[in-house]
Length: 229
Image (cartoon, rainbow, N blue to C red; front, side):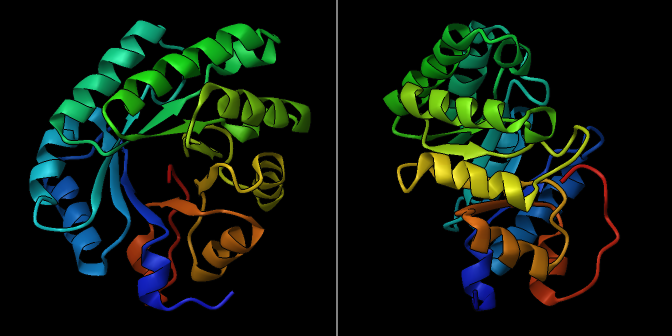
């Protein structure tokens, strides 16, 4: 696939989810996102008020992660976090699936968890992405997670938090796209550090990319970053 720099930037959720992120580093992330006109800035929910203020004169959306990064949060707490983030300015919510319940075969609990978030987020006219953490799942579990996410009304399925054992893999992105067809978006996140890797994810079926190496990718500079996003 051939994309201009501007077109590629609009696939990108420019991400800063580090535990030691400072206000200065979050501001830098926002400044970079505005400079390259990315799709969004993705941060932990605490930072959403600050990010929303930084992005208010741009078309870059603030995104909050909830139940991050483990997904083992009480559903009511996730819903509260999502509602608070939206009130603070988030336009999209990226939740983490309950990986343990999925692997235990408790589809009903997984589906109800996603549904509660989908209903809360959609009631406010926003989008919901479901992070599957594909590195912890086999193919059957990835397919099942995609189907449960779709049935619960999610708008996207997403590969990874970027904080587990591995990030996005081409074969997982392809499998997710095959499972959801054109009905849901697919976000590849974690471990994307070059333009070639970004384009390969898009070719595999990704409609959004979660990256922290946005500037390096869009300017063609090499990056040795291997932690987190």
